[in-house]
Image 1: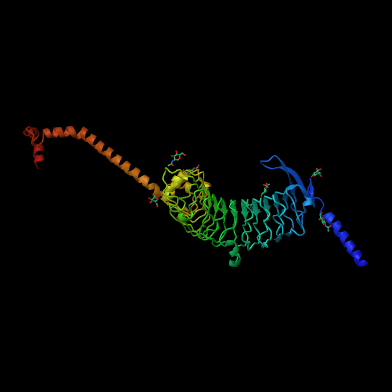
Image 2: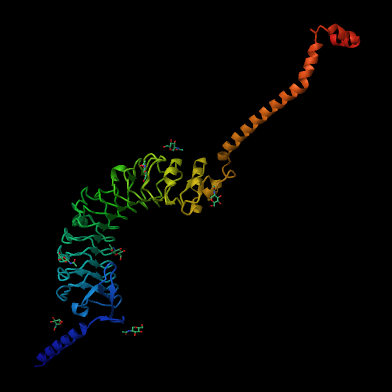
Length: 467
Ligand SMILES: *[C@@H]1O[C@H](CO)[C@@H](O)[C@H](O)[C@H]1NC(C)=O
Ligand SMILES: *[C@@H]1O[C@H](CO)[C@@H](O)[C@H](O)[C@H]1NC(C)=O
Ligand SMILES: *[C@@H]1O[C@H](CO)[C@@H](O)[C@H](O)[C@H]1NC(C)=O
Ligand SMILES: *[C@@H]1O[C@H](CO)[C@@H](O)[C@H](O)[C@H]1NC(C)=O
Ligand SMILES: *[C@@H]1O[C@H](CO)[C@@H](O)[C@H](O)[C@H]1NC(C)=O
Ligand SMILES: *[C@@H]1O[C@H](CO)[C@@H](O)[C@H](O)[C@H]1NC(C)=O
Ligand SMILES: *[C@@H]1O[C@H](CO)[C@@H](O)[C@H](O)[C@H]1NC(C)=O
């Protein structure tokens, strides 16, 4: 009898609990337990959509569909949700378009949790503790999904083909997981090719421990336009689809850059910052990048020189596509003056904080005075007496040798002029004074017919002359 009573109490308890759990969450104002729901107009659409701001409410579970009916934009960031379980929460909504679950405590997502939200377009699961997916059917229902964010989780493996059902996926972010942590696990993900649909355009796989990729790894991503693969252990630039327009390889272990790896005619932005091991950029390395507009080559300390042929022969007639060049905090000490042909066409040029050697060969940089980004930070490191002197402010006082050429040329010109003038003056004087005297002299010279007469005028003097 008491047992039955207790059981009854239990059911009553569950019932009432059910009622309290499933209270509506959407209110105009946010409180400690309520979401703030708003009609808002999406850019480009005039139809108002309902958005629910449920951030930082200490939710431990994903809300039930009845609690947030009609919501299209659901933001559940910064809660305490640990799992998405389709057995305890059969969430259904045809309205739901976007779910943000970043900064929760998610460890697992059950298969089919998203089965009944077929119109979901954006799913943000970043900054959680997801270590693995049970199988490759987790995202099966999400045929309309365009953005999936799994960055900053603890994934060490991803089942093959888990992203294949996402036919419309445009953006995938897997950055900062441990996918390459061990060879055993990484095999799944780095085996053969990246299993995505050809719809993928943006892929972020920064900091996931990639050491190398198959030659045809990106084959399935045949329309890839944006790839961020920075902070991996890659030593060579991987083979990419020719559609690539943005490529970030910063913080990788690339040692050399050559034209063989960079023949992408659509590439507009190339980031090669923080390449600790980069020592050489080969001749013509960037020559094939005919659409390149922005090149980042900063903070690679081992890069000591930049050949004057990395962009090919830099003549005056080239129509440069390049608009921005970032070349700061490298090991580069000097640049050939033919770079002037490129540099004078740039909209932004950053040459800050390189260890410049200030010889006469550096002075051409002064022609860019005023067009360099923070040109006050372009300073000599050597020779010692010029250390920290701004290159734009170098004068003949700092580098007398470079300006001496000009001076000695002037001096020679002045000397020649002086000599010429001197000769001219002597000539004039000679003509004025000595010319007529010579004439008289001739008249009374030794061969003069009047000689006897002259001697006759003053006999003493004549005797003197004969001695
Ligand atoms: C709680 O409510 C849901 C729907 O509102 C219902 O399907 C479920 O059976 C209820 N649970 C219990 C234990 O009554
Ligand atoms: C919402 O809060 C504001 C003040 O923060 C208050 O003026 C307003 O009356 C509240 N609205 C509702 C519907 O509670
Ligand atoms: C979702 O995809 C289905 C077909 O896969 C389509 O009929 C439906 O219109 C899509 N929904 C949206 C919002 O695009
Ligand atoms: C994914 O989330 C991270 C961190 O919240 C963010 O920086 C990144 O831009 C997001 N990626 C996409 C594709 O939305
Ligand atoms: C450079 O571009 C201009 C106009 O955009 C064009 O007239 C000229 O022929 C081009 N020169 C070269 C060398 O391609
Ligand atoms: C600069 O480059 C030109 C053309 O490539 C070359 O002839 C010249 O010797 C180089 N100057 C220096 C100082 O290396
Ligand atoms: C560069 O420009 C600054 C001001 O714009 C001027 O003070 C300086 O003398 C210039 N330096 C050279 C070398 O022309």
